[in-house]
Length: 457
Image 1 (cartoon, one colour):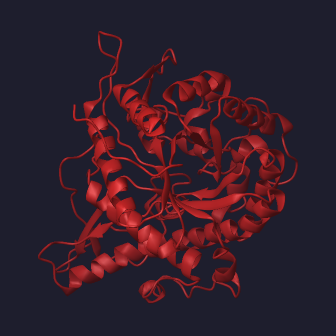
Image 2: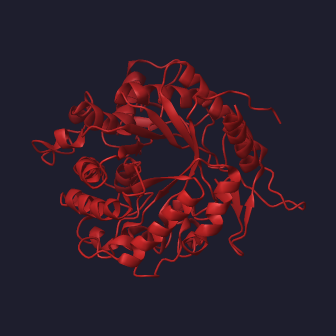
Image 3: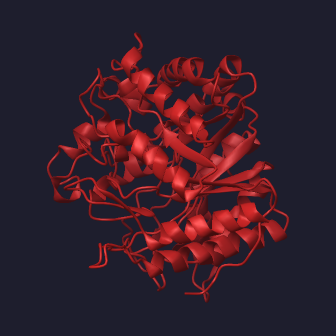
């Protein structure tokens, strides 16, 4: 195995990330109500194998064990999300003290081990009660989210300073309302645009609320931008396909949040869907509330071309009915995702240009069909190679002038991988889903070695 030798700036933060529905389990304990993912996972045909997050990794009961694992790995920080239906089971109104107490115990345990808590307020598990009221299609969702944020930050803000409003709003809008692969599973490009707008409005509405309840807060949003490439021998039609796809994947969020405007051409491209009446005066100003840093989740690039000669595209991203997504180029991960450290570097550089902010890589990793070997270890050389290649790209981006402050491996644990159920494993720690035993993989040991070497310099 090749040795990774690149160096990173002093103060660089090394962490790992998880999400509440993917690891916590305890789906009906201590007052937690159903989320849209509880509903979605119980809908036949939506999740591979009919899997649910009812138990997941049982982190709700095993968090102390998991904190000890993080400490053994030498992590500086742990990025986790709070489950809205655990904190406010009815979505709005009364706060569930038992739910908040879990996160308070988690934060205290992390701090006792010298691990910085980095909290995401929304990682897709909207209370089902709010989806029954329209979910992110309801403009009131911005106020619902702000009130929920106030409850969480008010309870934890004396110990937590790193706050992220939303994780990957592209997934909770486009993937969830247009493509239908995630909860609530709709397939309407117009709904996706409305949901995206309201998610960004919720983000912007919550930013000053977070600052009010935690004056020393570092406030962020996490996006999942993707480098978009067209055919090497493409023509003007392919260039337009790249532009459309880039707007739907990246500009839709970069524009309103960092430039106070939707990206060039996007409103014209989607005019056949809507008159955009959901965009109201003052919305874009609210969405572009000043931030302290930007979280970037990135795994793979996107390749597209233009549909031709009456070809029918099945692309449901807004403004992309003439865009065809093309096959990724090998080598591929177990998810079928293209491994491209170059695209990782390019999207980090772009994210810095668009935002003008310091960058944290809040998720990056790869899935492989891991098994425990006869020696009791989990040997995952492909994940080690992926880690090395993408950390090389991070180091290159830093050398090119990007202010990158930290890297969070996805994921700390194998977990419920959304529509793939328990079929795909991203963890640097293996989880036996029958016994819930944790086993640090070779990639976890290599990550620990890189962290230790960084701290020894």
